[in-house]
Structures are given as structure tokens and as C-alpha cells.
Image (cartoon, rainbow, N blue to C red; front, top):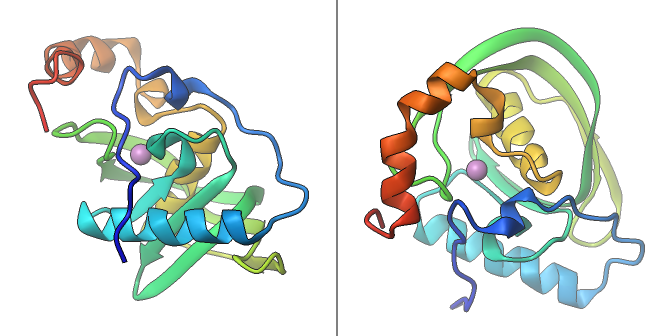
Length: 166
Ligand code: CO
């Protein structure tokens, strides 16, 4: 399957947009999730949120530890412990940042068919879900680092802004 979606990079305003809950997921939403998954695989990502493809919708796709998740309205309802990983983001090519997040979370969502699901990812999986759920709330990983760290990556951000990084 091909997809017409493309990755929107920083500083595209869509990345700041908080999406509203989807009340009646339909086939259109299911198709968007499939297309997002295709794009994520094509770009070697392990997670992708709808904002990143220009859509202010609460949709994420994640593939971690051999499992594929295509989720609607994902929410974190419980958090435990702390962990820090170096994270990348398809909307910030070339930038890696160490972010402190929760080590274990409980996620509630609807699956691609609209059925409620919940699961408890840990470690790197928990980190990927937190990164993607941040996106649908208009938060990116540069919002989670100190001002000092953000200043340090300003030259890299400028390269992305000027279209010098693919
Ligand atoms: Co990201």
C-alpha cells in the first residue's frame, strides 16, 4: 500500500495543536491509521502521531518489541517510576535528546476497530507511548528539556527550519 501522507517537521504549527477526542471512529480513521503505519515503516520510525502527518487527530501508531499498535484517543491513566532514554523524532531529523519519563504506564485507548483496549508498557515501550501521546497533546520532546539544552540544539533546529535536513 502507498500513502500520500508526509512527515511535517518542526516548526510546523500542527505540532503544537492539541487534538480533540474522536467520538465515533469510522473507516476513514481506520484507513488513516493504516496509512500512518505505512509511512512510519517507510521512514524507519517506531512511533508516529497524527499531528506529524498534518492531522490534528488523537491517533498514534507504534511498533515496539514486535507488536504493532494503531490507537485512537490514547490516554495515560497511570504512571510509575522514572527512566531516561535518548529519543529521536521524525519531525526533528538528526536531533537526539535524553528525556526523563515514566518507566511504567497504563494506557487506555480504542483500537482500530473502536474497541476499548488497555495495556501496561514498560521501559522503552513506555517511553515510545509517552512520546507519541505527547504529540497528540501538542507537546514535542524539545518542550521536555531544559532551556539550556534547547539553546544547545538551536543550530540543529535552524537547519531543520531552513530545510537543510531531510
Ligand atoms: Co516524535
